[in-house]
Image (tube, helix red, strand yellow):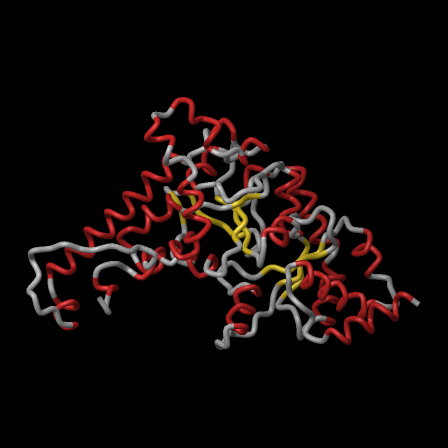
Amino acid sequence: MDDAEALLPTYLRFVKGVVDSADLPLNVSRELLQESRDVKAIREGCTKRVLGMLEDLAKHDAVPASDAATEGATKSAEGVTDVLSEEDKALVGKYTKFYAEFGAVLKEGLGEDFANKDRLAKLLRFASNTTNTVSVSLADYKTRMKEGQESIFYITADNAAAAKNSPQLEVFKKKGIEVLLMTDRVDEWALNYLNDFDGTPLQSVAKGAVDLGKLQDETEKKAAEEAGDAFKPLLAKLKEALKDKAEDERVTTRLVDSPACLVVQDHGMSTQLARMLKQAGQTAPEVKPVLEVNAEHALVKKLDGSVHFNDLAHILFDQALLAEGGLPADPAAYVKRVNALLV
């Protein structure tokens, strides 16, 4: 059938099969497919049947929560096959294989099929900073949230290595907080339609000012406030030097080892999504990120009194851009500044 979308949504385009129905007339026109109540009922029924099959496969791939957030989280479901029937054992691992092929396609359903959004969310799987495989469901993540943690944290990146080594993860690693690594091109678009999971909000670690809430003690909060006040003169100088590159500059608590990182405002388009749209030949708004600096880093402490302040400010920004997978707007100027400081 040319118009298969009438029988299944496009995010299930990997399904092949035959629909047997006595309710359709012999002559099936495009207009009938678009207007027929019977066709709509068949579409809903087929969608529910496919999602039900996927849910059954996913259930057999589930890893016990007790194995979580450690290297045990990479353990496949084969470790628990001894308690399954022979029929169930045959299903173990199949959802993992399916998801490796079609997981990105399945995510499209979050924006296309609002009625089944919650069911689709339960079928999603991700890698995280505590695992080496794409095996973590949102339900798994919730069972491992720290006491006082109020959000499901995630980061989007071009690949797993870039996500796992991102400066934005430093404070989360320090505190042992799990962060989901989202590396499919569709992820950021899809997450616009998934604000929460079972009442727990999803929060990008690269958007807005990091708020760990109850996970931060009062000493840390007070130190951050004092650093923000002490660095106001430096931030003003950075703002002037980087007025064409950055929307704002501020002291952050999300960095531990890195001198700086780039983030966007809470509801802003990420620099990664903007790059992806441009690569696809689409129009994307110019994104001016926020430069966040680590008040405890030696480079930042030396910055204020340096005679090379302007060059260092631009290098700091461009290196933060490189760390998240971007490229300086003027690579030649970046290299020239670095070379000038090396001699």
